[in-house]
Length: 294
View 1: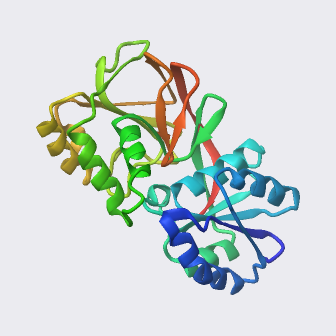
View 2 (view 1 turned 90 degrees about the vertical axis):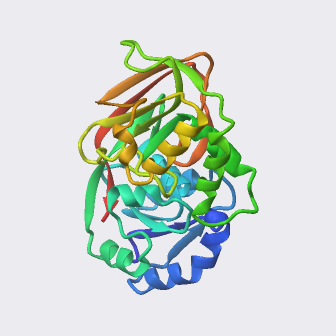
View 3 (view 1 turned 180 degrees about the vertical axis):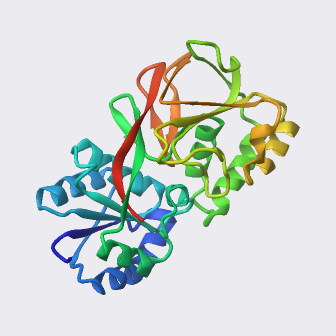
């Protein structure tokens, strides 16, 4: 076991949760014989550490952090062409932990996750492709990206309330965006578009309740622009996945969707901001692309 498992920890995840959880994470995996523990020092280190771990022959990589860390590790595995040979295990030390909820992985139970790693319990999940890169849980445009930009300025706030507080601010100030598809399936003035592989967003929202990570499709949730009062009502409904039936909300299910923006957009990809280079964005599903411990 110790020769096959590598733990990658992001100590800065969850605004310091990673460092606080380090001793418990180490203890859980040392109990099953794991001796390889590595840490990120800055954004982007995950790709370097994954590449090295795969070259050294590790068959399971444990990502300890939040959605951003999990995404960076999982995407690095996919870039190495190792999605079917190297399994990703999720340890929660972040804020939203949306991917774990979508997958059903016991990421907050470190000891159980370690036992699943030891027993080689894995499932294959879909991944998404955006341009020449990937995503695991979701990509968001518009309001979602604006909320994330606000969060990055709120370094004083801790815990799962971060997204909710930032979203409340943007509900009354976000101006909406203009976007189109080839077949005109969405309104030209839009508040938010979420292209979802998994169902959860921001730690508190069941944004795509029909989405599953094993169905070979993406669920695109489109929320048209609306006044602040209606936004507020929708915001509350989205916590329980009840927004889908509300006026102004539509869903598109398929293996691929192409969106046309007025300029290259900023998006939220698995909980991190990403400035895209093209105004036309194609997102597609990669069925059963990645092994996940669960």
